[in-house]
Length: 300
Image 1 (tube, rainbow, N blue to C red):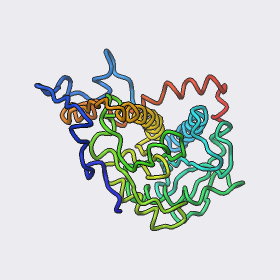
Image 2: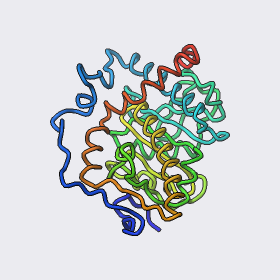
Image 3: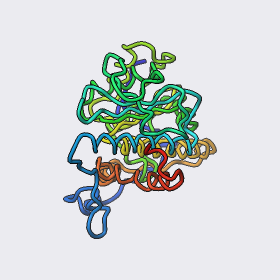
């Protein structure tokens, strides 16, 4: 079966759902950016700018290391599986990724490896190899999508559970609307551990030109973003959304119909909540907590 996006699937039947179609279409603040709309007062700053590549790289690696620790705190780690990649801001055809086998709760900025599109380590920590399957997935994504600077993939519990259905998440909550439309895709062709370059390319093709999140059937979740903060926040949100969807499916199995958010409302919510700047800011509370909990250890 070919990979597809959420727009290719048959809709939920009327027996399973209740329409929430409104008599009006929301339009408040549509002339504003997501951060302007969300901020009552002076808007949050959004993605920071840096005077040098060195300072930007330092920021990226610190936030990347923090993301691993946050993922571990949430229970997303599974042995040596899972990886995050971030494009280098100066050498854009290379990307940073985690060393194979380094425990996520201990991850530091100095642990990261810089690899090129040929899979060669060209900088950073060369004491360990990178994850071979991770390289094939992430290199394909970075080559296919110049707008994607970061990607996250783990074998999280609820993501793995939901992936067995090979279906996209439904628009059953405000938060799920961040995945509306072409932002969400499903890759159906599970082919085992990704050791084939063609498999990595098929994954990238399945995500599409506008995809932000993807369910990999019988495998787990994958998210991308303009920053590692955006990709990491989307991952935590998607994992929670999988948990909620599974709970809803259990209730629906007992005959309780689901209320699906109307397309116009879902599209409006997506527009007002899913910009790279706003999603960067969504990650900062977790980052600040992790910074305090580990006394900034991930910065080393």
